[in-house]
Amino acid sequence: MSLLRSRRRTPRTLVVRLDSAGDVLLAGPAVRAVAAGSSHTALLCGPQGAAAGRMLPGVDEVLTYDAPWVGLEPAPVTRAATRRLMATLTAGRFDRALVLVSYHQSPLPVALLLKLAGVARVAADSEDYPGALLDLRHSRRPDRHEALAALDLARAAGFALPPGDDGRLRVTPPPRTGHLTGPGPYVVVHPGAAVPARAWSPARAARAVAALSAAGYRVVVTGARAERRLTARVAGRHALDLGGATDLPHLAGVLAGARAVVAGNTGPAHLAAAVGTPVVSLFAPVVPAERWAPHGVPHVLLGDPHAACADTRARHCPVPGHPCLDGIGDAEVLAAVAALTGEPAAALTDDPAAALTGEPAARGERSGQRAQREPRERRAQLDQRAPGEQGEQTERGATV
Image (tube, rainbow, N blue to C red):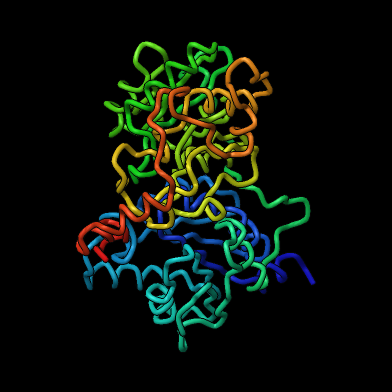
């Protein structure tokens, strides 16, 4: 059989991931598996994920749709937008589709549209009964990392990674960015996040940058154009401020050149993993670290995993002072960076083993922070809020 005839028999496949850039990056290994078994691989993503989608190896085409059931500020439901999507999907003549969703999301709204557009076989993880909307209803393994869960679904649908592919996150080679960062080694601090609960407060980030600079690290602060005021404040006189100076490919280049990246649970942390840079992950437990931690690179998790906000999916920290992240001491940050860059940490922290295991070091007077209440007491404090406050801003597009 000729190569041409073989390719004609392989499917035209659509991968759907409608969330943010970080979610799209985590879909990368599954996309490569699909591409290895398809003649054409398209990615349908939301506007916030499109730039990341264009950087994924194996993607032949990026389609965008601002889904009204996704995002922090969902698009309105309109017939016109739905008709445009249906026309695009129908014209694509896709044989198969993989719908990738997070563990708490439903694939069924887009599965209905895919079926109406004539996609013959649709696969997804689904907790809900799908009726005729899914041809493969796959069950996600408990506490599975998002990247691995997507790859599990791809395998169940008949797509395997090609030989030699280790399944790590990956993007196409980024541009060189030495003209932005200047010569010499550096550490990146990315202080922003679309969800404020998942990042340091600006003042805490600025203190960390000052501590890193005092310890001898050259620090580069990154951020989007809308975050320029934040990055200027965080960088101060201690760091190079690149806020608003990079698009996503150039940000990838800056991260690729760093010795380590300090960031919250946000897209640039996954982009750093995709270019192979170690990550100090400031991980607020509003979502589980088992599912969202940096994947496939050396990393250190910092933060209180037992904080009262654990598993709430809160957008804004519900505990005064944002203790799960702002309570991280400078010594912990310095020890984590030292561990990932290969520098001795003994002189930088009283308890380097704490940072290496991801457990918070003792705070109180030693770190200048007020000692925290026990997690059970903080949980009780949250539970005493008024019913209208308990679920506020914890779901995308709705108050629950």
